[in-house]
Image (cartoon, rainbow, N blue to C red):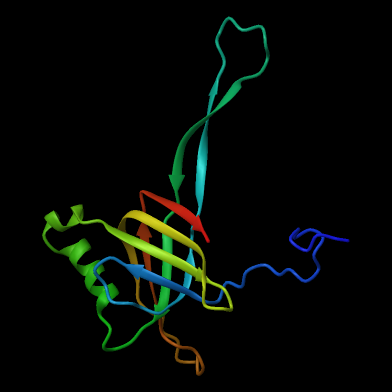
Length: 159
């Protein structure tokens, strides 16, 4: 009898769908994002070879972890200034606001509306805001704005 908990042998097991998710940004109301991109982390490599070594290669050690910027895309609404306000306060207002960092929670849901994966992003601040592009021939496209955010780190929790 086969074990149906093993993903490799269970033909009825499917990967998680990625279309139902929620983003919560500290201090902002819930915003419906269309896309979240850039949840990446990478360990740098430190290479070393002592000068008196008889080996003709360098040894490698793990270095620091870096986290990529995360880009959030959402429909642009006339009465929704929240991303624009955060960007404006951070980029153009008193320099003291630049020390303000936010926590961002990104949750991925399954078809039963249960959280399966959750990323907690720490030390977030906006680094780029892109309003919608304009195109007179785009008769069926919605206006989409983008906010790119730098994060110091993120952690992943699984249910």
